[in-house]
Length: 436
Image 1 (cartoon, rainbow, N blue to C red):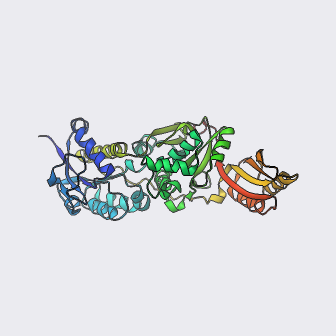
Image 2 (tube, helix red, strand yellow):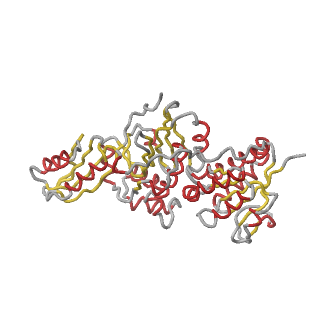
């Protein structure tokens, strides 16, 4: 007799529709690979009669979540509602009822991962969340399994498609930030309120998940230093190009002897870096391990079918585990407690753009202020002058963030300095470093 595993969906929005299409459209192939037929038994929706462009049996739709999470025949519950409440309550109830839970909810995992993993451990079931970071890009499972023998030393990634689209348009076409954001809205890549994307908050939640797995120590979103891209100008994009760099919004996590660095901010990276060529709404995550060296995971970071693909793959894994009675082997890997370094202790190179008085002695006074705080300048270039004011671009050697901030506090008070227009970190470590 053919084995059937019943699945319940919480939500039928963009990702939910993708999951439904994949499970139904590839049902035969999935059954062959899983060893059981996956049957979508119940779907929680807000509106029972809404046209969703799917061929649905009306009887599988419900507006009562209990008909999904409390149904004894449903073995896997898939949460694709988004948000934290009531999704968290439903997921916890499903876990407590002995059901495996699959989710693509980065907000819920980043904020309540510990609580969910503890509930899954008590019930001996799976909590899987591949779709929460990177859309269709496999990254959670590689970190947990394929790279499990490595000591991960660094993760650096483009993990928000909206900001990458905006910066790509600014780089390729010389458009302003406002123009690129307007185009992103027109194409549906940016929300009506894009603040979570452009201010780096979405990327920070994803980085919290990746860093927690990579370094086996819980990293909360509030531990992450975050800067967005709203202050990046077309001038900075152009000057970075002249210096042979590209500006990207990166999530960066590093393990050092002193602790863990976790930060999200605009970054200058060399044109030859693999991440530099990632354009449009695509995402990429660059991982450095002590044994494997450098690896990169690239693909579509969002969307109905890409994210649906990651969620469906988790459903297949959960089904296999239940068939083989090994559910619960994907538990929490945060078994250490490592300190999170404050941003002031982190070291980086910096790109600086200043508007200053165009007269003798100005550069000398600025250089003195930097030198007094042990900030060494690698290059200083005058980019524009109108005879009264000049725009200068500087790149520092590697320096602590706190020293740079102390120096800038002095520089900003100099009478000859009109404005410090841009302060952007530079990442250009050896692409081959990291191997044993």
